[in-house]
Image (tube, rainbow, N blue to C red; front, side, top):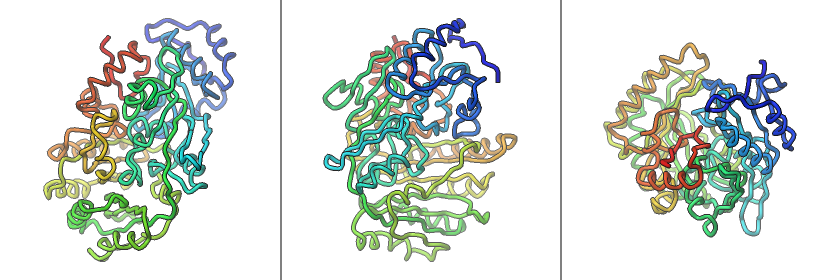
Length: 460
């Protein structure tokens, strides 16, 4: 692909000499459409997203990030920021602008005595767990190892340890961040406290986080895995699941998933993870085994790294998600879920009901930008298929399903599950915290340089 002119958001062409000066200032690499590997590195996980930036700055360190931010601000370029590149909305890439790519910033340092970790913004959860688990330590991280730590943490962060230790952002001790004016700041409970509040759930609206410091927890062998039932029993299973999770101890995380097995059979699975003494774990999962004879039972001792690979979703597939927090789990909600899934249009599509509560609910709603602390369950329709020419029917099924579920929605939504759904849905992700986030945006990014995200628009 030939290089396109680098053009600002107001239509001005950036002089080639300025582009070359940026390139010379970098320790990392600058890619343009004519360069080798551009076609590979401009792609993101969601195959529905096919955008072509004029420049990709593959940063080697903080200096590269600062230089790229200053260049983008000076020349008024559209900016996308890439960590792991797995955001379903495709915000890690843009058309015509500049991508500030942290994916080569991979340093992870574990302090086993303090039980902390310092990790750069391009690290994935698989890489993070690889380092932390050597010391028998872990943090709440997503159950898909290729996802980046940055996007997940900045939006909140669900994972198998969420009920015992809270969200990923609840375990954040501090961040280093490059703001829109090119400043390098540290934000923590004692320094730039307002910014620290905002990055714990507010996404990438306030700057580019170059490193995260986390609190870690001792996590050894877990009792975890899946138990499978036929779809014909799904309503019965979900009623049991609701009762089962309502009294679950914090050590137990259980998610219900409606799916199609590799053999092509619609089914419902309960995924469980128990972090505690083995005998107590066996007691905790016994009701699942006694409730009804399962088709398959794969619950057993596993390492945390094994548990983190229970879900695998290939890159390049078409992905379209719709989600909400649920205000209740009534029989009508269960009927709606099962009846709509029975008409699923793609065998790759799945429906997740994720039980939260526990440690998540013991943080005040105004303590972090993530505020849905009273949400008991998150509901996600994860639609996936292989061929773009099938998109219309799969998207229609997803939208119809989601609309039917609005009767049971709390009105809130997890920001990391949002696609391109408009300003009102972004507001729904933050609820009463939204106005405070706008004030923070006005302070740190009044020109909205960082707007290629679930954007909190400034008002100045």
